[in-house]
Every structure is written in structure tokens, then in C-alpha cells.
Amino acid sequence: MAKVLLIDADSKIPNLALMKLSTYYKDKGYNVDLKKLDIPYFPWNVHKNFIIRTREYEKTFCSCIFNHNYRYVLGVDIDFGGTGYSLHKNLDDEIENLEPDYTLYNEKKTSYGFLTRGCIRNCSFCVVPEKEGKIREVNNINDIAKFKFVNLLDNNILAHPEHKRILNEMIDLDKKYEFSQGLDIRLIDKENSDLIRRLKYARLYTFAFDFIELKDVIEEKIKFLDWVDEWKLRFYVYVHPDMELSNVLFRLKWLKEHKCLPYLMRDLDCWFSEYREFYIDLASYCNQYWAFKGRTFEDFLTMRMTTDGRNNPDRLANSIRLFKENWDG
Image (tube, rainbow, N blue to C red; front, side, top):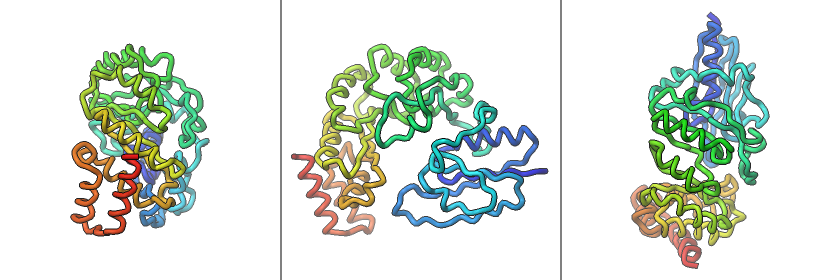
């Protein structure tokens, strides 16, 4: 029987495109194999080449999520795709509209999918507008929610004119949900906040505080979320070396004062910055929520460097100095 090889280069969750390819080729009678490579995202990690033997397969597909990881996948007649390979290569509509094959990943608990595609924003660090275009509805929740927990990958569902109808449909279906890409707090109002409250939400309610200029609108809109318990709101915090450290620390201080959690999203340029080590130490503090909630940066970093073999007095002193200067200043 003819065989197809699907290569997952670097996905952190089951890869929707590969699961739909699996459905397509299994329906045609092919045997389908999956090979997961787990190529790292971070540029300082050691990368190695993967030599893929494709001779026994009639077709081989490889999906790469992160930029340039396809370069480490070597083989003959590999059909590459994914955001890390090209923003303009998509599945044929015939395949895109198929149900994903969750058996490919032996997934039995969580459904994944998009109710909408596209975004109304044009953030400098984001490829969604170029890749997906204008916001539009692409799926019904009934078609996605195969399991009790549903991880929705929409980039800005609140920007869709019919999002309140969509939220009501989600409520009626009675599943547990998460918008893992976050929600746009600029678009929160009393009505959609009440709808989100009625959802059975599985994890943290996630928004974004990417730029200091958003402070006033966040302070205005967060009032509609007063039903959320302390430390259950999370904000992605974008960081770029061109931003003043005081800009970054101001946003983190604001979140801590309002009992909101941060998740530091570092631009790749951070790893080539003079503050590279500080960004790493800051992310370790912010992205471990027990630390951000309950410890000072100095206490956390001192403990971290003295208990895991990273004893580096100069780095410790420098990171603490930078934090204090920009947190207090």
C-alpha cells in the first residue's frame, strides 16, 4: 500500500495542517506516518540537521512553524509548508475544509481550530495580516469541538462583526474553552465581557499589553472584567531591544500592582542585544507565575542562580541593578 510521510518540524501542539493532510490521504487509501522532530525555536539552542529518508514514501510533507527551521530538514522531494517556510503557501481548499485526523497525534482530549481568520490590527511583529488577510468567519464551533476541551487559535475573534453570535453559540455547546492566542482588550465591552464570563473557560483569560501606549485603554477596559478573580488575567508583554527597559518594566509593574500575570514575549532580536542575559532572567521571573506573584525579582534570581548551578555573581548583580533602576525609575 502506498505511504505518505508527514513531518512535524517544530509544532508545540498538534499540527492542524498535517492532521488534515492525514485525513485526505487516509481517505484515499494511503498509510500515513508522522515524524516529529521538535526542532527548537530559540536561536541559542543547538540545532542539528535531520536527514529524512523519503524513498519508501510516495509523498512527503513537512510543516515548519518557526522561521528558517525548514533548513534543518534534509531529504529528497519534501513538500514544505507552514508559517516558518512561507506566508503564502496554503492547503488546497479541498484539504483545508476536511476534519483533522486527531489519531495522528493520539489526541483524545483537546480539539483545535479557527472560528475566524485574519486580524484588523497591523502590529509590526505579527505576520497574521499578511498571511491571513482581512478577518472572516471560517468555521462553526460545532465542526471544531470534537472533545470536551476546545483550544481556539483565532488571532482576533472580537474584531469579527458577528463575534457575539459566535460566543453565544459556544455557550450553548457547553464545552470548555481557551483562546490561546489571546483576546483584544481594546474591543472588550460590557456585552461581550458578559458572554466571555458565561463560557466555561479552562485557563487564564489572556490579553496583550504590547506597548506602553495601551495603558489608558487597558485601564478603561479592564473595568468590564471585574468579575475575573485576582491573578486570573494574563497579558502577553511584547519586548524588543529598541524599547527602553523602563518601558518594559513599567508595564510589568502595572500588571503586578493590578494582580495580573505577564507572559514576556521576546522578539528574536532580544537574543542579539546587549541586554540578552537580562531579558532571559526577566522572562524566567515573569513567566513562572508563582515567582512573579510571590517573590521579588532579586529573591527569585538569587535563588535561581544558587540552586541550579548557574552561580554567576556578575550577571546576578547586573540583572538586579537593571531591574531596580527601571522598576523604580
